Image (cartoon, rainbow, N blue to C red):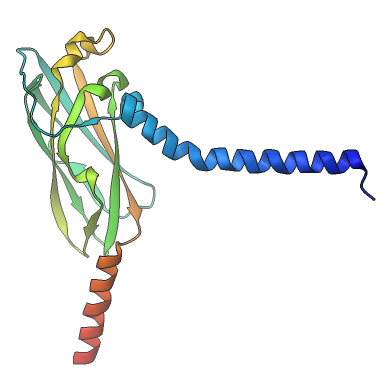
Amino acid sequence: MATKGTTKTLWSLIGVVVFMGAMAWTAVPFYNWFCRVTGYGGTTNVATGESSQILDRTIKIRFDASKDRGFPWEFKPMQTEMTLRIGEDGLAFYEAYNPTDRPIAGQAAYNVAPYDAGAYFSKIECFCFTEQVLMPGERVEMPVSFYVDPEIVNDPDAKFAKHITLSYTFYEIDLPEETQAALAKEEADTSSVN
């Protein structure tokens, strides 16, 4: 027979486990929101258009690519670096290839190093804004359009950055419903012909 103290301890422990589970569940969305708002962790800005100012000072942009473990695509930058004036628009391309015999959907996560520069790296357009679906054997070139905000020169920590590295990591996601529906229809049409 459980005593009153044992029951109270048991309920307290259950409460702690539930609380910790809830905190773990909300941690990732909260952290992502925090990074987008503050630029912490190398999270970039999303720009609605070009920079209004271009400085005479240049900065080197380096490009990096990686994949989640077990993700079957080939993924690489088509250029390893470029030098731009601060505020000047840049356009870079990444290449992805699906060597498998099945369609695969992927999403790119990204960050910028050094972290202090993340708040000043502004993407105008990027393949990372949407999910990507590659059919079997498909190879694509995916663009990213960006600039380094001239305000970087006024930041006491970021103003000394001589280079910025833009890194992407692709990971697999579920195929979008419309892609699944199109594949099912195609398979049904093929079956009815045979």
